Image (cartoon, rainbow over the protein chains, first blue to last red):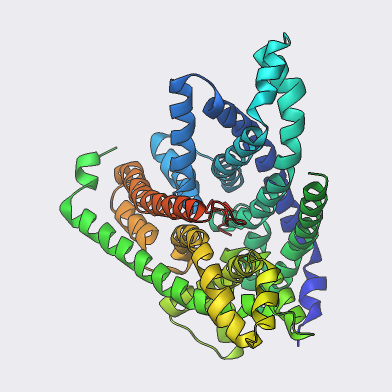
Length: 217
Length: 236
């Protein structure tokens, strides 16, 4: 059976990892949201160059592994004389990777608003920016929130790659606890529980939002 | 940066070998995951008392864990309870556990996308539940599942790189070995394997999109199409 003394004896360490996992996920959520909005706007802008750049970003980043992006920052940059900590490299990699998915979610949300609304807004004298700000975005946001929630869940799970580069997250401390105690199985069960504490309520909440927003159309 | 040295034919061959392992492991994993995922998805869809609930809880727990944790678990923790797996087996097992849960959701939403009226119609025309599933529901649902499954395979190909942590000789692992020879190789090699991953996955995503388009035009009049878009970022 599970040895709970592993949990109680190392609670501080677990909590430190838990905190850093949460911190990396939140930071990456903010960065990837900002980057994602910029890329989504580029992709729907009328300028072909911006569209192309936005599309290239999304298609390239979505199709390569996250851990490769992490390695480029953690192992690649130092060869050019730029050192990053595991936590920094991990958070940057998570942001770059997730931005591609967030950009797609936002773009889909904006495109789902009927074209006629933009035309109506423009012909009643609003500028492009005003129409976006007051007419399109408020409607799009409803469609975008559940996929954003899903991205946050993925961020929490994906942040486990920090453990590979000594990023001081749950995975990393799980590893250090198991090296100190010579126990593996139980240590990782508790690590799993800490991840589930974050992800299960989040998924339930996103599911709830999806159902509610689906009903209100 | 030493592009010329990094891209020597020996290194390229070694990387291609890694890509081969990545593809092979991902392919084996997706086949088994589809079989297990189908069973889990159908069990959840069938709403069998207790059993469907248990399946639902297991699927949700696994879907909400990082794949990396599952890989650590199959390789480092299972030996502690007497199950010793080779690196390759541990990687494949972890991928199957994780992807089965993912695929079961695709199967379930494929089944759910078939209008309930069809079951009722089939049942009232005298078919048994099994016959209805086999001849009416599954053939339609399967067609709709193909695009999201291809997308899931893309995720799986990317996720296989996580097995670098247990030294599975896949593409990223082999890249790291080449990088170990010379620091000036690191960036050129990472760029090269990024392009390799991109070419494989982008071609697959075009296939998924085409299938989705075809599916959409096939059934313009009727119901839903499962999106082929990768849900995640999911590596997980």
